[in-house]
Amino acid sequence: MAEKGEQKTATAAPILQNDDQAEGTVFMSKDEAHLASLGYKQEFRRHLGMFESWAATFQSMNTITGIPVLFGWIMYTGGPTSAFANWTMVGGFSCLVALSLAEIAAALPTAGGIYFWSYSLGGEKWGPFLAWMTGWWNFIGRWPRACWVCVVPGVQQGSTNFLLCAIEIAYPNAEIVSKGWFAWLLTAIGMFVAMAPNVISQRVLRLYFRFATLSFFTLFLLYWIWFPIAAAKRGHFQSADGVFKHFYNGINIGEQKQASDAYTWVIGVLFGAWVFFGYDASAHLAEETHNASAVVAKGMWTSTLSGWVLSVPTVVVVLFCMQDFDSIISATYTNNWAEYMVQLIGPRGAIAIFSILWIDSTCCTAACFLSAQRVTFAISRDGILPGSKIFRRLSRNKMPVNAAYLVCALSIAITCAVIGSTVAFSAITATATIATNFSYLFPILARHTVGRTTFKPAEWNLGRFSLPIGIVAGTYILFLFSVLLLPQLYPVTAETLNYAPICIGIVTTISLVGWFLPFGLGGRYWFTGPKRTIDQADSRDTGEKVSA
Image 1 (tube, rainbow, N blue to C red):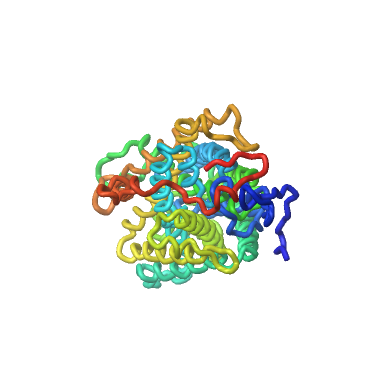
Image 2 (cartoon, rainbow, N blue to C red; image 1 turned 60 degrees about the vertical axis):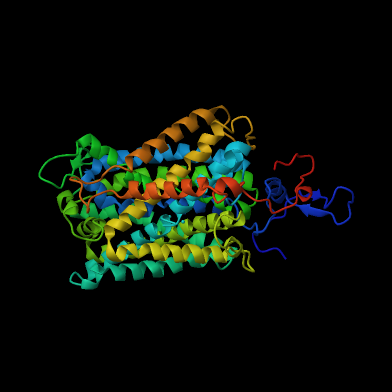
C-alpha cells in the first residue's frame, strides 16, 4: 500500500526488459523513466512534493537565524549601513544564482546535484574532470552546512553559540561556557539531533520540514511584533540616518588604520553570504520528489526569493529597534546578538529567544545535513569515495543511513577544532562558504560554454534570459570568491589571519593531485564520471531517445 502522500502518475510508460520480448513488461512512472534516461534506477521512495522541495532550500538558508549569527561581526565591519546594503545585495544576486541552477536542475534532476550536472554539461571531453572537481569542492564545502563537510558543523556551532549565550545571560559567572570541550559537546549533541529526521523515514522527514517551518515563522513573528513593542516601551528607535547612513570601520584593531572604509564595506558581504547559499538542497531530494523536473526547479528559486523578500525588511526592523550601538560592538558575549537582545527585551526575553534560535538553527543544520548526506550517497553510488559500497546502501525505509553516519562522524571530528582554537574553526567555516559557492560556478560555466549546444532545457527554463542571468550569477560568484579570501582584521597576525585561502589551497591541491597522479593512479585514468545503475535496454522511455 502506498504511504500517505504518495501519488501515482497516469503517465506510466511500459519499459521492455529486452529488445525481442514483451513478456515481463516493467512499468515506470514519468519520474522513474526520466531518471533511468540519466543512467540511474529508482532506489528512493518518491513521497515528497513541492512543499518539501521548497522547505529543503528555505531551511538550508534559514535567514531568520542567519541574521543574528554574524550580527555582532557586521556591526564593526561596516555597521548598520553595511548590514542593510550587503544583505540586500547578496540576497538579490543569490536569486539569480538560484535561477541559473534551477534551470539545470529541471533538466537533470538527480541526487548528485551539481556534481552530476557538471559531468553531463561537460560532455565526454570535460565532463569527468568537471565532475571530479565539482564533487570534491561541493563535498568538502558541504560537510562542515559536507552544504555540504564544512557547513554542517559550522551551522551547528552557530546553534551552540546561541545556547552558550543563553547560559552566559542566566549565569554570568559560569566558567564552563569558556571551555572548548563544553562547546564541542553541545555541538555534537546537536549534530545527532539534526541527523535524526534524515535516518528514520521520509514520513519523519516530512514532519521535520513542517516543524522547522513553524519554528522559522515563530521567530519571524517575534522579531516583527515583540521587538518594535519593546523598543516603543523603551522610547527609543534608531533614526533613518542611524540605520542607512551609520557606517563603522572596526576591523582596524591596531594603532594605525590599515583597512580603508571601502575595504571594510566589501568585507561585509560575508554577513549575507554565510546565509544565502545552499540553493541546491532541493536538487538533492530530486530522486525522492514527485514531478521532480518542475518541482525541484521551482523549489530552488521560490525558496531563495521568499527568503530574500522576508529577510530584508526583517533586517530593517532589527536595525531600527537597536538600542545602544557602542555597547553591542564592545560586548563580550559569545555572540554580541546577546547584548542587542538584553538591551531590548531584557535577560529573560533574551534567554527565551536564544532557546528558540537553538531549535530553529538545529533545524537548519538538519537541512544542510540532508544535502551532505545525499551528496555522499550520490558520489558513493558512482564509486568516488573509499568504502563507496557501504555508504551508498539504503535502509529498509529507503534512507541513506550509512551516508548519514559518515557525515555525522566527520562533522563531529571537524568540530573538535573548536576545543583548541576558535581561529581554526572560523577558517573551516569560511572555507565552507567559499567552497560551496565556488562549486556552483562549474555547472553554470559549463552550461554556457562546453555544454551550450548539447544542453536540452526542460519544460521549465529561463529562455532567452538564461545567458545574461548566467553571466551575472557567475560574475557574482567570482566576486564572492575573491572577497572571502581577504583578511578580515588588521593588522594581520597569527590570531587575525584569514586561514581560508590556505584551506582552499589544500582542497584544490588534493583534488588536482588526485586527478593528475601518474602511473594509472590519478582520477584521469579511471574516473569516467557517474556510473549507470540501470541497463541501457531498461532505461527507455517510450518515444524518447535515452542519453548515456
